[in-house]
Image (cartoon, rainbow, N blue to C red; front, side, top):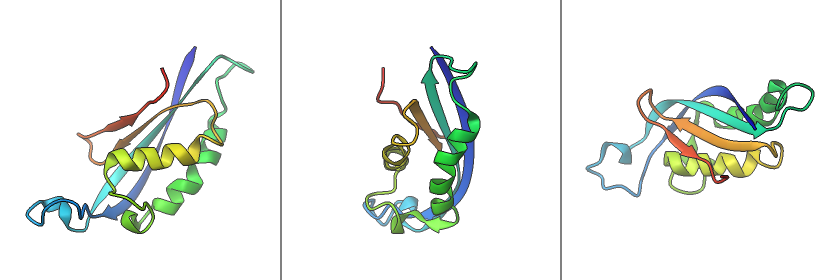
Length: 117
């Protein structure tokens, strides 16, 4: 079993309105997000999946989020956890070998969603 990954970046704003007004994330602010998509499988045609196929599945969603207010697109609290899950549900139909998604809001923070063993 092999695991490969591909990184994508996008800029977006959001606010976490469920937090108290005293919390800095309650207010509109932005991040330079890094999305890492992992696919896992056996070697077919000498690879797990063509990186171009990953890009074809991911880029339309990244373009939808880039330079946008995530609160206008993701209809729940725009935490890293919910962004991961939102992307997972949209990518899985096009990437059946999807294994894990990582979202970094900052260079020092990461949320991973990996529901498969």
